[in-house]
Length: 236
Picture 1 (cartoon, rainbow, N blue to C red):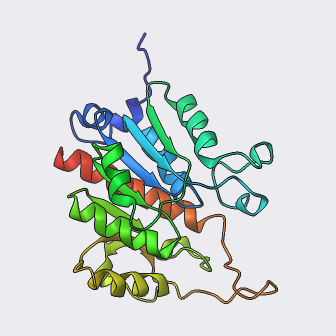
Picture 2: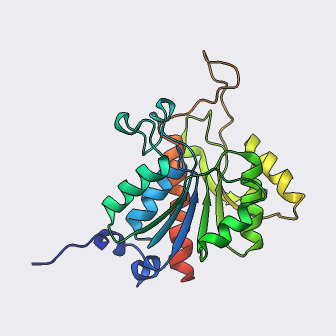
Picture 3: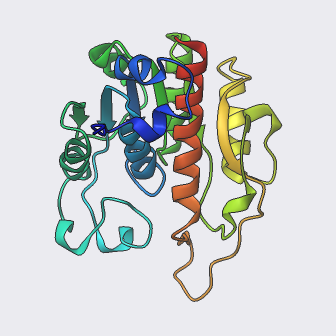
């Protein structure tokens, strides 16, 4: 009788020794919201050996419609700690390190040095200054990164794409990030973006960003997919 393992089904689709390669890799996920929570879970299930999770928030009722770690039973708890417990329940051999603070522009170089070595970074944070600094700093340190652009006010997950930042359009956040990074002499960054024009939220306070249960998770899966593909195909 064959003994099943965690990774039998994944191993069947990835290159030879991919699971062994992934088990030696460290991936940092910045932001555990509607995008990052799903990306972190996919990485854990795919066999990444070490995850570094960064998020300073606790789970709130507004997270329930889209965030993986948001349950009625986890209200008020640290996103990092809920994520850590769940991911270790998926794979007890996984190494999970956490930083229960928000990333702050100007301090990111020290954070990346603290958690080194890092083989890949997923940027799923919303704060603009920290997002730009994370992208620029990681690339300056030679750490591959893929960033999520805007998923709010969108309804169609099939409009999400993986592209270079220079190729994005229709996305107001991508436009702002692109302009800011040019000032730091960064032209090319791999991103996930939507070419769906943002909708105008109805019946809510002005400035409220609407979110669908199916758009941010798909963005998270695309981020994780690209990380796994890069790490296993390049053998980095």
